Image 1 (cartoon, rainbow, N blue to C red):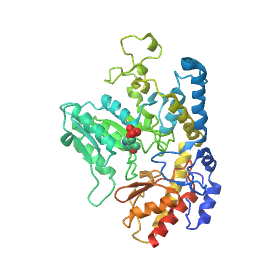
Image 2: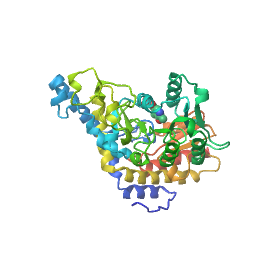
Image 3: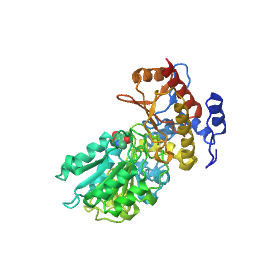
Image 4: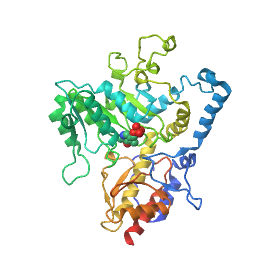
Length: 428
Ligand SMILES: *Cc1c(COP(=O)(O)O)cnc(C)c1O
């Protein structure tokens, strides 16, 4: 299973067991706590795209911070085993490796929708010549609300000034040429191009480098929402060059419910104190922060966008997960992820005709771990059957199931079991 091998998938259970036995990442499964079925068996967990599982060590790290708070009170800011004052810095380098960025370009702070607003304050600066924002039709609702409200804050009209790239009639996903075509036609009047990568509903991954290049050539700023991309895709944010990116850490990154998000601001903006931004004391120069002066001096890089001192308990839990990403590495995770998802696709293709339609692109470069599946035959009873069998996946009205075998903790046997349940549903 080293890079570049092509694996010939097989239908029987023995194949899944063989793949698990030779999986170089198999030991990572033991680093996670699985919800259990009534019989004590772990569930088949295919919703890591929604909320990642708890790393075993998360509790230890959270309790360490709780103990330091108990022992030290306010002095924990300086004297905790991991002092709280610079605590978020423990995560910066690891997070930067996850998204392919320089440490200077990354900070862990706030939550995703908040960060999207903060980034738009800085990088969505419409002018009379450039009033437009280009995004995908079918973006995640919070992103649509954030965009519409920002557009209105600038006195513009979301109906008119937001341009949405649509799938062609009869198609489910976007063609890169159509995204680039929109930028070609409207880039000259566009302030910001904003895409979710990967799209939360279809599982489609976009060509970030090509989109960024095209948008910059037209003088637009470019941002990505990587809620479903961080910890999933092999990202190279620095080289691809978007102006900013935002993501959450509770999906593939297993940071815990509601935990802090990540922000990327490209190095080219690292030392531009003139960029308009919403300011807070945590973004202020560390050397003079506690002089409590009236004038804001931003830290260089992404840290300069921080507002508040962050919640330490959540950061502690995140440390446990990011350590695992560092050990596993994104290239190895993506390699196993492609095998798991490819194997799922292989098994789905062998179900009785008409059982399921795969919406996600078949090109492995245009997707990550997630396959979005449309079931026309009694989707609700299928969901019930899956739940009863101890398989957790995500259902979107009216008939889409999103299944995402996260390579850190999912096995080939998990995928096999999921497919067998789909098969029994199709045959009943
Ligand atoms: C999950 C997700 C969100 C959630 O936003 P929060 O602010 O973390 O609640 C927003 N946008 C996208 C694209 C998502 O996938």
